[in-house]
Image 1 (cartoon, helix red, strand yellow):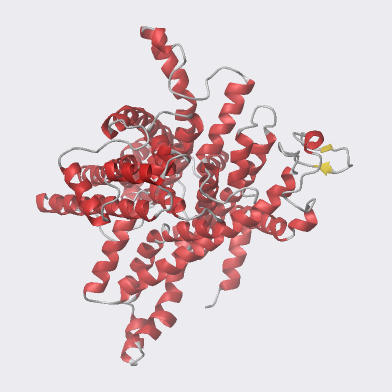
Image 2 (cartoon, rainbow over the protein chains, first blue to last red):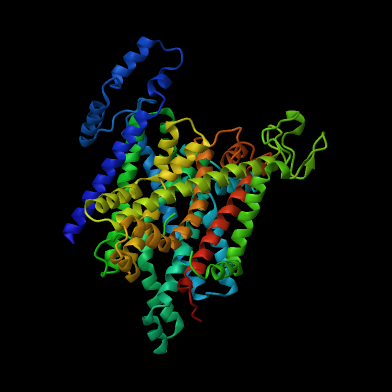
Length: 330
Length: 292
């Protein structure tokens, strides 16, 4: 168990290192220069050279990469080229917003998705199953950014009941206690609904399939033959065993959710990491992009690892993940 | 192709999901191919911007031209842009998946049918690529060169082959131990021939299903990249950049963003349902049973 864990951790570390190296190379290969963007079109050649020198961008790439690695190993992410603020502060403000959005939507979409999928499996082949299947396949096909726009159209422009962007109202600093919480909830409602609705589709489809697979297993036939009540079989025999692959899906869905958050944050101007990442890539803000991708890679690796550990706990027969096994993914 | 193809096609058409998927995709493909015939012609045509912009759906402009889905802020016909955009969206999605399938087939087949260090390296590479955050990679790659439809195809293809490789690897590994393959080996056939003629044709079922699902996913990602401004660039219409441009006029002209989104959802739903129906038609054993 411990050696397996150590092997997984080493593999995860390799992935993170690979992501960082690849990001570094891609960023430097890309046309566009942060210094030109920083100083504007009026800058002279001497000013550009001096600024590049000050930022260390005139040194050879391997030296720059080694310097970045050394700094990160010391826990120092550098300063944003565009704003001059420490990267740690820029991302430190953004992570809680993304984590709250992704965490809440993960929780809600799994709870609701499992409920819908289980209801479908239990009523397999009926009109309810068909209606829910049509709904979930539609939700699954909805692009988050478009669903977000449609929700804004309905709830902000037509009904005028929910705000369409940001995490706070303009007067949030003046609010206290419950009023402030209410302000935050109103702002989180639309982005959260968008991510959750899209998530429900995938989870429900997966749970329905997993439950129907378990339903066909011989031990369920045995339970039926013993004369156990159907609700008891569904809860204790089928749902319980169907949740095993769902746990793996949980770890694997973190990167997909984070990806979805990038688009949804762009639509709702949610002050999270996704929005910062998109802006930083466009501005070629090297330190910010490097830190954001590295940290998100670490989270993805940890998410997968957590999924595997949970799986081992739920299903003791599983030692560690094998190659060649199918999985539900987006 | 073996026996029973007719039966498979029949069971695909008898399945309502297969019918819906084929019908919607067929219709979308037809509109895309016949775009100049079914629309007003030029997707970038602007005529008297002030008088023709923001016309609601089903209205007729001063020149007597009917706009079934209205016009956008430049007075361009939304329906025309939608059918020309279908060319880009369907084309990019299909080509990207073909590229993914090609890479995935090669990697999966070689990893599954060779020995020594090669499969280990290929499997490690696949697992590594699978663990990369795809959207971050897409953003970086798309920022590398000047955004274009061709770039989106390459980027989506290069980031989408891993699940296909995994599927093919698993199939090839299990097929390689079957008696008919052992027979071919004992007949002294070359390994490449065995792989290409005996194993791969039998390993294609899950690949076809994954490709059907993958096209929907690729179309959605293409639209996402174009929405963020790093995909297909205006004035060339793609469903993604149409949604993006409609975003600014959501309040006074909601149809500009709504129409391409509805088209996108319909096509992605069609791909998903077709994939599900294919799965059942090609391997009847996977059909679920019911408990009452």
